[in-house]
Image (cartoon, rainbow, N blue to C red):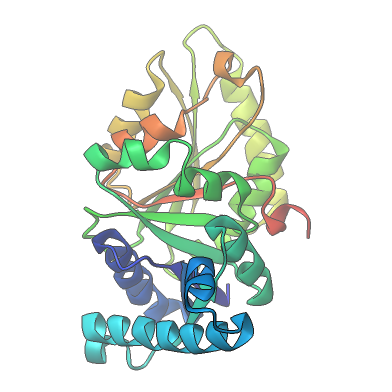
Amino acid sequence: MKNIICAIDYSSCSIVALKYICELSKKMNTSIFVINVYNNSALGSLLEIPNILLDEVVQEKKTLKLKTFCLEHFGDSCKNLNLNYKAIQHNSIISAINIWSLKFNADLVVVGMKGVHKFKDFFIGNTTKSLIEKSVCPILAVPESNIQKKVNTIVYATDFEEADIFAIKNLVEFAKFFNSTIKIIHIAKTIEKDCSDKMEWFKELVLQHTNYKNLEFKVLFSEDILNTIHNYLEENNADILAMLERKKPDFLNKIIYIDLVKTFEAFSNIPLICYNTKNSIFTK
């Protein structure tokens, strides 16, 4: 994991996200590309200035603003980090992040997310949800309330899919920097008796793709998926929850479907790593 994008919008939650990934990067030795996406189309027509000239001037000023803003909030604490700044003019935040994720060869995109009461309105049908669903990179969403800077325990929720194996393999590369324990869990309805056997089968598949030692596998039986995961996270002092965004039409009736909005509301105090099958890790 060499390159990370952190997208900020000057909000308090994006500051928390940048502080979080900057602290983690001290152990990761990665390059962080801090970006801000803006739409400047209206200004060009208003001022009747040639678009190319205007774009260059505005982009330069906005990049300087971005750098100044970050240095004001972090000061000397980030001077030894490999930070790069880029203001990007585009009419779509999602498209801009994806374009520059590919240009920067990014391994991870970091964003901030608002608190539980504000986040639902922001999330449904808007930027963060779309980014999770369409991003070419895994997304690390950091809640505004997050105060932890450690990554001792990561919980990954699986449904025994092939895509889970690729996601876990990628997650291992992140966990290695911190020697984190990855606890791979599956929530099964009580009536499903064969899930323990499935987990053993899945464990064998995972271990064929990685020799990382700090992996644990567990099946939890419950009809209440969200509360079961919530309790498990608290009992195990989890620092990050990781999951695969799924689009199966029948998945609501299966074992571990988790609505993303409810998940963010329930676990709004710890960061969430989200994978989707559009991520480049699934096509490499």
